[in-house]
Each structure stands twice: as structure tokens, then as C-alpha cells.
Length: 112
Image (cartoon, rainbow, N blue to C red; front, side):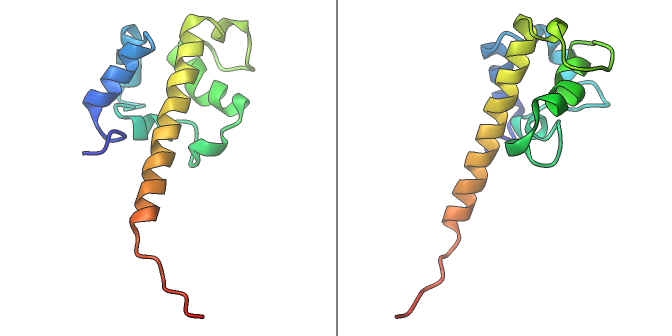
């Protein structure tokens, strides 16, 4: 199983950034962010181009149980920084998986 789809690997990632106390928030039925792949797409369809505002609105503020609103100092504490770090680590893993999958495809021959 790929690291991006492994729930065990995601648990290790949560532990590494110090967010195990928020695990129940990641696993809430309305989110179900239980793998790196699921969390990487938490803010939209393309984790490679998520704006800071979108990350704040759809990921950080809900996980910290902050009311909807603009990005502010409340979300830039230790947990907020760890959530952002985890998000970008997950996005990086997903991008690496997609790149490996693309590289494994047979390449067309180009005849000169």
C-alpha cells in the first residue's frame, strides 16, 4: 500500500508534528481525513496550488474549531503551524506518488 493511502503512516505523521491530540478532529465523519491522500485534498482538488486563504478557511480553522473568518493570529500558534506543515507534507507525498506513477508509464518511441 502506498504511504499516501496508509492510515498507519498518517498516524505516524500526526505524531511527528505533534497533532495526536487532534486526531479525533481529522477522523470526524464530516472530514474523514485518515490518510495523507485524503488530507492533501482537504482544501480542494489540487493540493499543489492551495492558497493560504483557502487552507485557512477549509482546513486550519475547522480543525482548531475556530469560527469561519479571515486568517488571523488565533490560527498561527503551535497547532496551526503543525497543521500547515502536515498539509504540505501530505501534498508533497501525493505529488511524488503521481510523478512516480507517470514515470512508470511506457514512454512512446520517437523515431527520427
